[in-house]
Amino acid sequence: MTDAEFDILDELYFVTSFADLSRKTSLPPAALESALRTLLEQGLVRSYWPDPDTELAYEESSYGAIVRDSFFLASKEGLLQHNTR
Image (tube, rainbow, N blue to C red; front, top):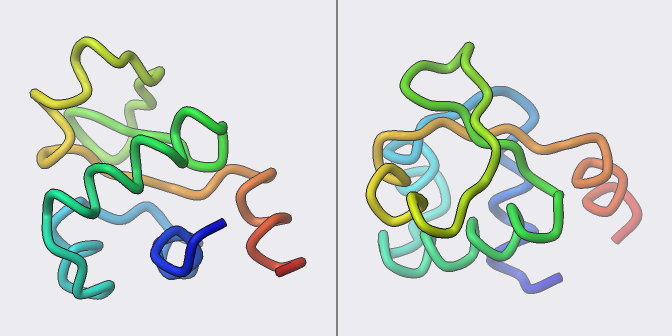
């Protein structure tokens, strides 16, 4: 897990929007998108769209179009990895 991925998981104990996550981690949007993609592919993060209550399964084909309007939450596995680092 990279430092950026660790910092992202640190902010995802509660559902958080992309904009808030970008502000809290100070990551540029493109870097945040890339790190979130990796975390989603590994099953360490869950995504929600169009609102924070509707979970959306990760799909590579639609990810780029909706990522900045999405919300995110660490999965149980993500929290475990974050806490054991």
